[in-house]
Image (cartoon, rainbow, N blue to C red; front, top):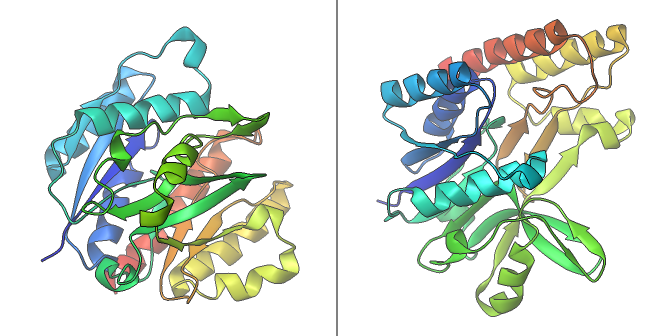
Amino acid sequence: MSTCKLVVCVCTHPELLPFQAASLKKFLKQPVDLCIVDDSKDEATSSEFKKICDTYSFEYIRSPLHHPLREAPSMRHADTLQHGFANMKNPTHTYLGTIDADLFLVTPLDLDLALQEKNILCVRHVREHIYYFWPGLCIWRLEDHPTLHTFKWDIGEDRGIRMDTGGTTYYYWLENQENTNTLEIREYQLVHIPRSEWAPLLLSLPNPLLEFCVFDIQRADTMGVKWWSDLYVCPNNTFTFFHLRDITNWQGVQENYLKTKCENFLQALTVVLRT
């Protein structure tokens, strides 16, 4: 039987982790092992992550302190991910990958079927001439790409074009184009899409999550807040990932808004997981 190992970088909201694991267990056909790389800035949050990992038998790695010049979020993410890849237990799985801590698989996915004629499931990011793998969702067949996890997943710049976290995988792609056959997942960042186009996308979600979105969009409108969650959808619409996204306070809104959004989402996801 094929198996999968996913590296998850975490720093806030420990309560999400059991739900992410449960959604993967329910909807991913392959048994999955999680390696949690903890980049919490305070020991109380770190202790919560460690307790969850002990309870669920997740592999746990504590990220070391970052260099003072690499404290920016994208740099911390890159360093945390690379520390996890370098220090995790040697992977012997069919598939290896990385996924954001607030990304949830919400419909069935069979990696053997999805990657039957491909060897990397990824979200492609393009900056001018640069093509690279977004570390928020990238899963590959380990036999075909045995060194991808040892490659740098850093930010970078090439010919004046800046790249976000994972940007330096552009150089991996250049070296391995002939053996890189990607299943490119469509990225829908709803905050950047006209609202008139949201309905067909949201209708791909299970009903409890659709109801959550409708309610939460209305709530955001009432509070004068931009509603930002994303969908990542297979090109043939066979599976969908939901990106909660608003768990970081990028808009500077009241903390109770974010807390309530997170709580409402987990209530809806609980209904999905029970059906």
